[in-house]
Amino acid sequence: MAVAAAVGGALAFVMLLVVGVYIVAGNLVNSVTTGSRGLAKGAVPAAYKPLVQQWGNLCPALSPALLAAQLYQESGWNPTVVSPADARGIAQFIPGTWATHGIDGNGDGKRDIWDPADAIPSAASYDCELAKYVKDVPGNVSDNMLAAYNAGAYRVIRSGGVPGISETQNYVKRIRSLEKSFAAPVRRLDPTRQAAAAIAFAQSKIGTPYLWGGNGTADQGGRFDCSGLTKAAYDKVGIGLPRVANDQYNAGAHPSRDQLLPGDLVFFSDDLTDSRAIRHVGIYVGGGYMIDAPRSGAVIRFDPVDTPDYFGATRVTEDGAKALPTAV
Image (cartoon, rainbow, N blue to C red; front, side, top):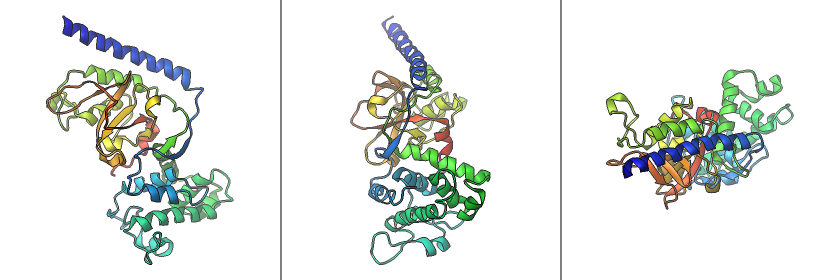
C-alpha cells in the first residue's frame, strides 16, 4: 500500500507539472523576448572557444555564436574530417577556396588547412569578406552574408537579398537556428508548448528497466537508455531529435539553471567545458527533478538534477532540432 501510494503521488506530481507547463507557457509566450550575447557554457569545445570568441567578433555581421554554428554544421568540431567533395578540416574548406581565402591565423608563418588555429580565423575572415560584398544589399546583413557563403555574393546582389533558392534559404535558416544553440541567452527564453506532452510520455515509462541502446521498440521489450527516452518523448510531439545525448544538446537554446522549465532537457558530463563530452540526459519535470533512464540495472525514474556533473540544459524547439546536421 505504501509503494502504491508513493507511485500514485509521484504520478500526480508529474501531472500537476504538466498542467503547470501550459499555464507558464500561456503567461510567458506572448510577453517574453529572447536575446543572445556570447557563447553558451560548454557549447564550444574548450580547445576552440578562445578562437571562436576572438574571431567571431571580426566584423559586425558575424558573432561568436554564428561562427560556432557554421563550424558545427560543417564538421561537428572534427579537425580531421574530409567530405566526399574533398572539403577539409574543421572549417571544411575546399583546397581551391583555401588557396585564395586561407590565412595564417596563428602567425607561425604557414597556412595549414588542417590546423584549427588557421582554419577558424580563415572561416571568420571569409565570412567578413562576403559581408563586405553584400553590405549594401537590402535585408539583414548576416542573413545576406550566409546566403553569399552558400550561393555566392553575385546571386545575393542580383536578387536584392537572400535569393529564392530553397537550398540557400534552408541554409540561412539552419545556421541562424543553430546560432541560438551556441549563444548564451541574456533574457528569459520562451517556453515550449510541446513540453507537457513530452513529459507525459516520459512519466508513462517510469519503472521500465534500462537498456543500453534501447529505443523502446517491441523487440527490446519497450526499454530505453537515456537519450533513447528523450528522443522518443519528443518524437511523440513531432520533434525529431538526434539519437545521441551530446547531439541533442544543440536542439535549442540553453536556459540557465534558475530558468529551467518542465520539458527542458538536462545534461550531465565529466567534462564541464565541452558539450561533445556529454554522457547523460534527462527530461526536467520541475522542483529540481528529472525523469531519466539512469544506467544498467536501474529503471526509468525521478532523479535530482543538482549534482556535480550537471552540465546544462536545452529548451528543445522544432526549428532547433531541424537545424542539426545529420552527421557530426
